[in-house]
Length: 294
Image 1 (cartoon, helix red, strand yellow):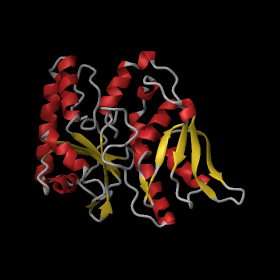
Image 2 (cartoon, rainbow, N blue to C red; image 1 turned 180 degrees about the horizontal axis):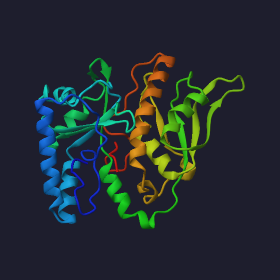
Image 3 (cartoon, rainbow, N blue to C red; image 1 turned 180 degrees about the vertical axis):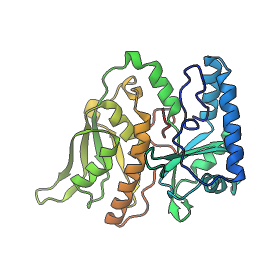
Image 4 (cartoon, rainbow, N blue to C red; image 1 turned 45 degrees about the vertical axis):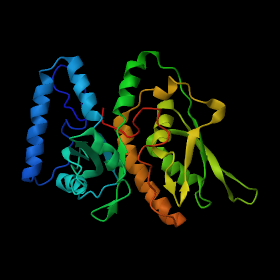
C-alpha cells in the first residue's frame, strides 16, 4: 500500500522501511521522499482505524511493477508514466537487503485513482529497452485474509496447467512454479512417444502458495498461448480457502524470479514476451492481483 505504517503498530507498506534501492537522488526524488515522510508523520498521529482507512485509499492508487531494468531509477519510473499524463505521487524500488541493488521491481503510487487503469494498460511496454510488467497490488485481498486468518480452513494445493507449448518440459514447469513455494510434484502429460499433450499438474505443499501461483501465472502469454493455471476441478477451492493468508513479501520476490524464468522459456519456445494481463485472471472478484510487502 501507499501509506507509511507509522507508530502504533501500523503495518509496513511498500512506501516505508529501509529496503529501497539506493540511487542518486534528484530534486524530484528528494521532494517525493519529503512528502512521503510527511505522510508517515501524519499517519503516526492518527488512530488505527483512520490510518487503515487512509492506507486502503492509497493502496487503491498504487500499482506493482516488475521485470524492470535494475539500472532504472525512481525518476525513470515516474517519467515513464508522466509522459502519458499519469501523475506519480511516489515511487519505491525494492532492493536486495544485502547488496542494496535493485531487484527490478517496485511500487508506483498515483495522485488519482483513475490513473491506475491506464497505467495497467502500459504493461508490456519498454522501459530503458526492457519489457516491463505492471499489476495492481494484492493489499486489499491480504487485508481480507488477515481478518479471516483465525478461521481459515485448509485450501487446495493441486493445480491444473493447460495450453502448454509443446517444448515446455517438466523441468521447465518446475522452474516456473517453484519460486512461489515448495512443490510436492510437477508433471507434464505426455504421449507414449514422449511428446507433450499440452497440459500438466503442479502440487504445492501449502495452499497459500498454490493461490499465489494461480493469481500470478494464470493468463500469462507464453509463446502466443494463454497459459491456463487453475485449481484442479476435483479439488475446487472454497471461498475461505481462496482468501488464505499469504507471505506477500515472498510472493513479490517470486514474481521477479518467475519473470526471469518466463523470459528463458520465451527464448526456448520462440514466442513473444511472456506478459500477464493488466489484472491477473486468477484473482478473486473485486480483489487486486499483484502484491505488496507485508
